[in-house]
Length: 168
Image 1 (cartoon, rainbow, N blue to C red):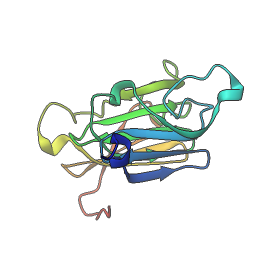
Image 2: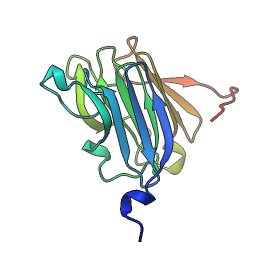
Image 3: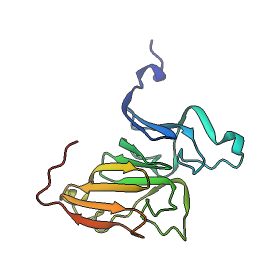
Image 4: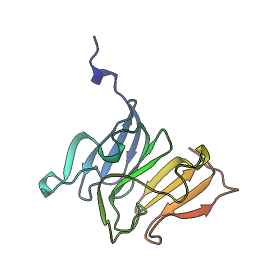
């Protein structure tokens, strides 16, 4: 008889210079590497423990969601549920998580990200694709609206991409 762990496998990987995230077929997220900015989804008060060498399961607001996609920025992390809900955690020093950096320069645990007008309306308003790189985050909705959050924006800025094509 196979144990439960034998039936869990990685479905997607995201890497940055400092940390790695994976999604599993069970909808869970694991991370390892540097945790200097809580990009692994937990607070580490001991600097000796700010590096995690083995995969650690990430909880917070994603705990009860089935996560299908992850993205890893320089010191922040993103996740996308099968219901089109985006989550973020880690460094927000450059407003890459779309929340005021004055309120939250570092987001310790995954939180639900509130993109303008994307939740509670229709399937078309749900997030379809997430990307992170350096100190910015990008989100594409079913309605083909692109949102970006970085040092130039305290919240999410909508970009028109009507004639652009997007490749998964």
